[in-house]
Each structure stands twice: as C-alpha cells, then as structure tokens.
Image (tube, rainbow, N blue to C red; front, top):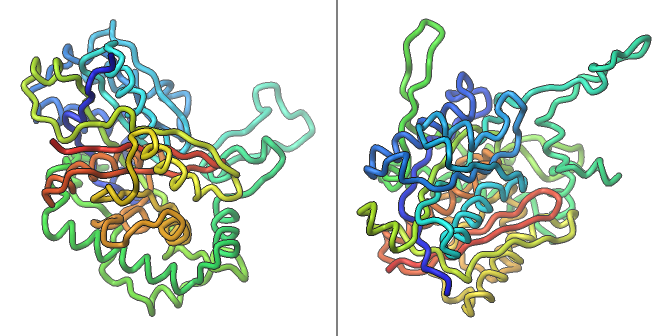
Length: 398
C-alpha cells in the first residue's frame, strides 16, 4: 500500500535578473546556500536525507550532475545517491514528483528535491573544435539561445519559444492588449505579495561575493517592476517584426534555486517536522502535447492530475501556473476554466521571472504557503515546457 507523502519544508533564493545579483555564483553555489539554510531552519541533518533529486536545464560539464554536487557540498553522506533531471521547464517539478514517488513506495522517508538554474552563466560552445577545423570556420553557439529551441532543430522543426508564443496568439485569438493587461496584473500581484511579506517565509537571502573581496546580501526578487502599466507596455516594440510578443508580456531570463524536503509520515515523526502540505498521490502528472502548442500542456497536466485524484478544477482553491508568456496564461486560463481570483494570486513568472530549472518547484512551494496564508485547503501547480511537455501536482493542507 502506498504511503502518504508530504511536502515537509522548502526554501528558495530570491530570483535574480539576467546578469544581475546572482551572476557571480554558479547554480550549485547558490543552490547549496538554499539547502544549508533549509537544514538550519528545520534542524534536519545531512545524514537524514536518503535521496537527492535535482532539476536543471542549462547544465555544463563543469557542474556535471548538479544534484550530486550540491549534496556533497551540503555534507550529505557519500552513500546517498543523487541525480539530475532535465525535462526542460518541468525539471524541478518532475524532481519533486520523483521524490514523492520514492516516498510513496517506501523506498525512503526523506528525499531532497531541488531546482536550480543560472541562465546568466549558460556557456557557449564550439562544436567540432575537438578535432580541429582545418581550413573551415568554427561556429560559436550560445547554449542559452539553443535552449529556447527546446531541441526542435534536432527533429528538423526549428521553432524558438517566441515562435510558439506567436503561434498561440494567432491560433487562440489573444490580442496584444489582453497580454499586456495580464502582465500588469502579474506585476501588481507580485509586488503586493512582496510588500505584504507573503514571500518572506519561502525566501532565504544569498550572500554574493563582490570584486573587492566582501559580500553583498541579495534578498528580494529583482524582476517585478512598479513602473509597468498599459501605456509603458504598449510602447514596447515586438520581439519579432509584425508580432505581438514583447519583453514586457513574456517572462524574463533569470537565475535562482529552490530546495524542498519530501517525507513520509514516519519521516516527519522522526525529524519532528510539521509539513507544509500533503502531496496527493495519486494527483501528480506528466504529459506531452503538440510542440507547436506547448502552452496547452499545463492544462492537460493539471487535468490529468485532477482525473487521477478523482477531482475537478472547481475543487481547487488556488492554481499556480508557470507563465512563460502572458499569451500562454491567457489562452490556458480560458481553456482550463480557471478563475482569475484563484490563479497566480501573488503574481507569476511574467513578473518574477523564469529560471527554467527552478520554476516548477518554486511555484509548488509558493502554492503551499499561499494555501496556508489564506487558510485554504486544496491547490494545483502546473508547468508547461518547450517541446510540448507538462507536469502538475496537487497539494492538500491538513
């Protein structure tokens, strides 16, 4: 019989802008800082962790298997296995799902799940340079830009994420004005949550080294802007000529990390933890869809998780959906029948930013806190990803 599974505790870093406050640190470095703070806050010891699962997209081989690097830096015993998942934007939510499945099956009582990304430090590469280019030229490839292709060049259908977003706008009939209006709402909600202290319980400050040898404390999300309004967004040029997607109605490129502990009832009792929420099992999902309509995957994933739990969307008190583009959120809100009053109530990625390997776990942790702060019971978190992938989890407060 499957065991109950709990989101026992979790923290995240503030989210940094591209080339911003977190740029001097690697993802594994600020990920380690978040994990260390989680140990300190909960009193959990490194030896209490039985598995470590990470989600990260823009890995390079100087940080091969980032989950293992963070585990060893945290002092988690050598015998504890660690692995890193790349399911594009779904990566850290799938790390959480994998952790929950291990606990449900009785394989472990305490699993660490993490999501981390330093998009500022995504490397460049020169394919073919190992064997020499002789009389030819070598191409200097930006892995960050390639990431936005989500591998589509390899199946001979090279659509960047901006192409998919424009396709959604046309196919779903979403106007530039609707996108901009939603972007303003996202920023206003994010800033209101920050100013009211609703994010304080989930964010741990990060000490970032300076060039002069000291450190500076980074403690507040950098992306949300108070000066955004319909007029300023309307003045922005589209990314593609003749298009409707702009830098203002799309999520930005960011850095950040989140770390969580997933436990059984026995693990909670042993560690003396009061959980944030129960992870509903069944109630998790991973799906695929047409890559040209990547955004739909978040609706498909949430519906699949609800079907598994024998619930409907009307049963959910709150929904967190990662919004890579405002057009995707507007289209999926209509498609899924999601109430605006229950959806991304403290802002979304258009405001806070989208460190791709971190976002799935970030929104799940925030969902748990948002349910608790509002004295609500049931919520769903869902993430769409490039190449047409999606993941979702359901949380229940006791």
